[in-house]
Image (cartoon, rainbow, N blue to C red; front, side, top):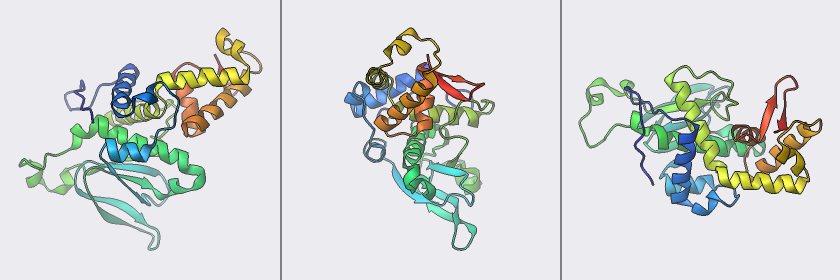
Length: 264
């Protein structure tokens, strides 16, 4: 696994923008499975997580209301989970390098969102573990301060996963969630492979003139939806994730007054 030396703020929070994350994606996928950079294909997230990132995965009820979709564990300790049988929270012992995914994402209609959530947590591990991880081989100030002073894991809520970009990035946590979400999107849909898939699908739909002209047409809302569905199928991601990637790469744009998308 590649290790990166990120530019960071004084508090250790990484300073990364879209172009930085696209480059990081090329390095990671190029190291893991270089053919995925050019050839459209769905990433085997569980294999990538286990064999490349060296992470374990488990499924639990992470909250009583489904508001928490995933966690990434940076340090051994305990995290709160929900016990539905007893209708109460309880502490779960966890170990460094474990991803916890909410059980709701095992439902058939949530599998693709579960894949994205899994990749979001992997992205936190790549980008942010140095902020939180404690070296087990060294005496740390945490040894004298107690477990409560150490960050065992970070929780990712429904508003953090597959974010549409409308949320304002104010706090360090906001930025880190955005970074993890963008990297997850790029890992699942690498830019060159995704661009090739878009071109192939637009050709299949027979709407190259709309795509090449990069203009708005009365029929484009329909084609943008169909393009999003096609990319979602090809890369095994949710429709929301496909739309966000298409927007981020400039293939479609939001038409706010219609709450739809158009090919540009």
